[in-house]
Length: 126
Image (cartoon, rainbow, N blue to C red; front, side, top):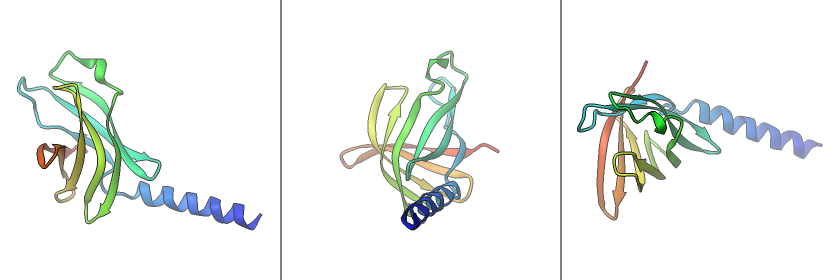
């Protein structure tokens, strides 16, 4: 019984730590070539961070709303995240990904092939 209580406390403690992660919340991408942008909800998924497309603006492709765009992102401390994957809607391809908080309201999000990365700076939506 003692082990069950300790295990439950550990799981709840990890969930509390994940919910306090400063990257969690709603973020807005940079506008694409046509001026459209997406809003992404970053949330805990297991012990990692995942992102789901919450809304699409300036583009008729609303079929991507609800689709996971970021998954398996690990917090490395200091506002840095790595080890995840990102889906690029404009190319319909998946890349290795990393993220880095820049202050409280900007997030540099990158997708990488080998040592070459392409990225955007997302803005926190209040």
